[in-house]
Length: 443
Image (cartoon, rainbow, N blue to C red; front, side):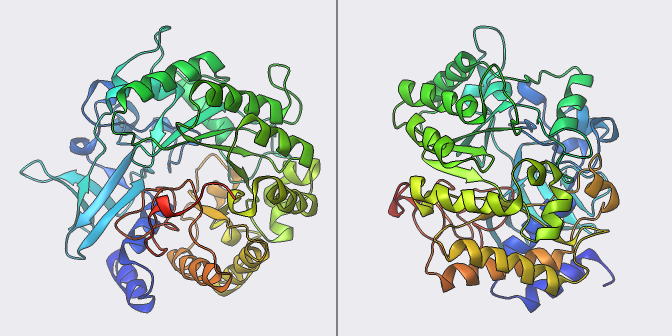
């Protein structure tokens, strides 16, 4: 293909059942976007909600490599609308790449647009600074540092443990930069709390609850690095669970409570449930056995792939299958030097995993892989996976859900093009429109 535009248009023509919005969104997520100075935020002093770096960097360069975008943060997310493709409202998580063919810039009238190959392809909306970000905790910390919101304000993202105890080349997941992201923020002198105090979290939530008068925030996610020993004297289930317990006691029923943790034994999962967690995300990362062993060496060493999958199925007996939603990192299947070399092979493998879980009533979701340059897979694969893989995955995902009579998982906002708010992949944009209110959050 002679240009990125030609490639994108070819895929839209070849896969007409995949929303055109999702094609652009996946390309932006897999390859990143550049920002003119006119499109950057004024950090927490401005009118635009800045990127919070809520767990990973999700950038194609380190902070020193991002230029002005490291000093004046880009927006947390952008919304695409209109343009020559008549795009419906599409929320996209920002992944900065100064060398991307996509660029956000203001025109002569100050209106932001998305440009590809030098041509304006859509209008760009940026998230307004929420009122709750303008208020500090009593100790001076910002709400954005303690309890940032993403997905256009839908989800409060509580990364309460900013590092991972899978450490070093023999344990860290090969696509994950959580530990580097912690190091780079500390090196840059940015506030980046390693272990968040439960009282700080509750105070930040009180500020959000007070000033989020429209009740846009609907769910919270408790997450962080894996815990193989203890943190503050607690094992993984108790560490993450005690935040949920405190939140549910202080704000009963205010938000849908979710936790991202390892696939834990049944008794530990029961503790999550007892603490008030409603949705459990025991992420399985990548389906293929060989790739799981290579890319997730710590998880293979401490738990093992077969036991990991068994625990996911066991957790469905506690939470209900619908409320167990494991994530996988879409695209690492094709990462060199060990990944599949053809899109056909990669899609077949990933679909096998989808069918395995969906046949048990469990609906996985996925995050589009961002090849962060400080990770082994990011260094070896700066371009990520082919866009065709991501588009065909959306097609396979929806088809597999339909085969098993499943619908969009709870806790992710409304599905459907023009309606979805989930910003780190297009799976919700590609599913049939349905009101979340129609979907039970518990089974």
